[in-house]
Length: 260
Image (cartoon, rainbow, N blue to C red; front, side, top):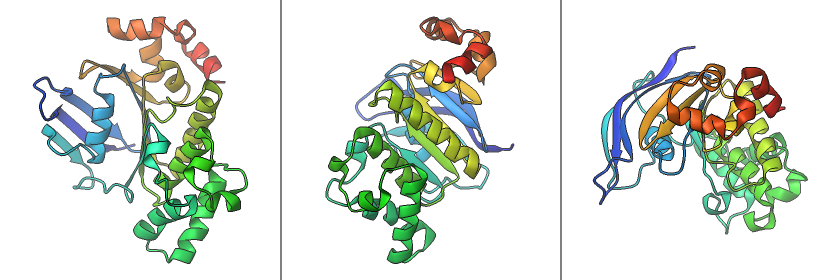
């Protein structure tokens, strides 16, 4: 695997704030890996996701460097898909599911509307939406929370990007649906050879599938490494505290059991 993006000394400060939301982060993103960014609310993990995706709000001040192997940042939708925390806010309430998923395929794959609708239908089948023909004509409010998140994943992948960022994409769902969504994401990115950046506050949720975990605290990168190594031999007190709240994750065999 090769380095997809080198992040060096990256800081982000939002308008009206003096304390950086992200403070001098050094991190490499590797092609084809599943990287979990873990931390509490306000730790900077979502800010990192938006910085990587080029989705920081107007007025945010970014310092440091992000060097992409392609020589230029990925284009959202075409090169990079983004799944937000709340599908109710990321999906357009006045457009049908079919229109929303097809739009990405039409715009980024150069398909006609007829071709894009056919592609959208296949995507709904791929993310296991029941009765996909019927769902194509439905509006977001007519589907359950878990189904809406599957739709959001389908829309994010419609343009066949090489990178997928899931920003707290399961936090609004119950535990059973969370496990289903994580399993689906893992399966989709494996099959497509994609790079996945999975943002979560739940170390247990990420432990079963992530290749590496990066622990964030107060806008800084506290610890990073292979998942099994970090969870079985954490170096930082904060990482130990996170693991202590999930005692079944203290050894790699138990990590696998928790994920099963």
